[in-house]
Image 1 (cartoon, one colour):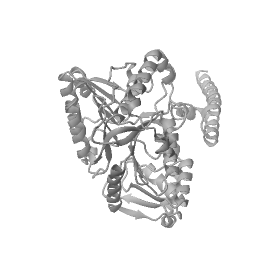
Image 2: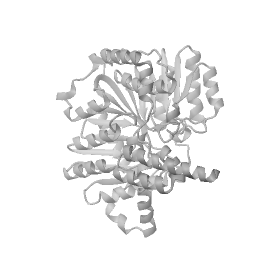
Image 3: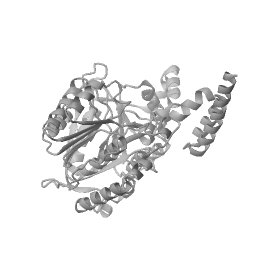
Image 4: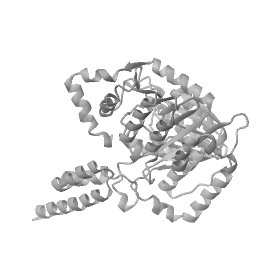
Length: 471
């Protein structure tokens, strides 16, 4: 009797979930797959659907409404304070008008941008910047490890907290899985405010396990900031024997744009804690540099798929070249079409991926898309020395991006990501030199030859491609 009741409940749950899928799943193919599975195999499909089937992160609107007046006043103040540093770029960079609307941000001027190549340069810069903090330090990483670099970061935060500087640390539970409670308790005991991202807050959101906060943000005093591909772990310094040398890129941004990055951090902190720390919102203009830059936050809370649309816009806006680094190259249909159109326009399209990878399914799936782009003149490279993890692009001769978003469905639709878009010819030249060095350390891959590889390898590629929506 009890078994019959449980079976009946599962089938009822399957039907209800199938109706939910019909009303909410993004693609017709996904809707059919979920609906059939939920009705035919509810014991497996129902729990899988409520973890993996969600495409929107719930709860943000309710969290905003809890302190709506305060948040609206803070946003108004931030925009008013930043007004003098905003570039009226419609006449200067009109091709990024759509990105301006997507991000609800504008290019700012009087910034300085420093390209940081690999872990030593990145963390030397970050830790030195933290040591100079006078008012506050905001830190957010997808991944923290309790290892050598993790301890250096921990002690840097503790030192500032004990010096009376307000210090905040935010981490993702999945990315930082295994981080010992003792590590966190040491920070709290010193006065550092620490929180996980808490995606499952609220009884309706208990199944929001498939979303990740993949951002990597550091802000000091609202004046200096860092963003890019690195997390806090020894492997990012090249100390993982299986994936070393680790190849990654960050950028340090001084000036008004730091406040845009600070706003992205504050939104995440508010979700996690419902607290709104008192922060500086007066832009600090850099006297000897006039780099234009803006921050593009993307998240599954937004109405539109900001990360994917940004990439599509960048590909469609290029006239001469687009070079990009994609450790996880699993593009969706819109990006595939944009790549094809760019190549047909005669744009110099070059894509570098990693010869070594930390995810075999993703690595194999990438070859499916590379083969689909054969015959268009797109040049592909596999970075040979180690694991290439950077998320960067170079567009034409003056625009570049450095961020956290990968070329995959998870970054396009499921992750909280952030990208710095930088318009400056000198910075673009540095990026060009960096790319050329990476191409030089890679082997060029001819997509036409992939059809000649063994059947078992090609079968693995096509099988892995089926998992692209959840990779």
